[in-house]
Image (tube, rainbow, N blue to C red; front, side, top):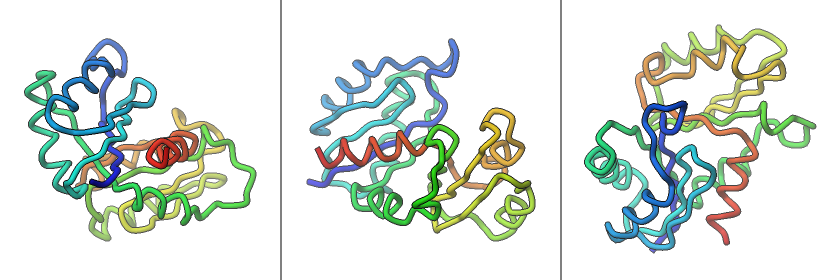
Length: 178
């Protein structure tokens, strides 16, 4: 049974699409997942399951819809895949504020055309590095004001996408290892 990180997009942002983490953990355990833990209120789940990440994504999306009454996009990574994301940090060794450094996790590699548009949206001092199904971005002037951050979306890239700041990414890996 492998450890997996499940990232839910679009929950608990304001009053809409509320999901209590306690209820989420209980429902996942009731569905047969083990060692379920959550981080924060924004849909970060670490669990043990027999399935691979792609199967988890396909299984969990309809379960979540049934439990909570709305669509919740799911992106999953194995513990080893998340460890590779951290080990492959293209900005390693630089003193970056982890709240302004994001990794966007994609459900699949996007086509080259949206990636070219994304690269064209980079305006210094922001930086972007695409590695497979992850997009690493540095937003030194803030994420909320970033035109680049707004371009990293499912609608623009044609694949599911959800972003986490670097502190959350490394904490999720610690949880998966713990």
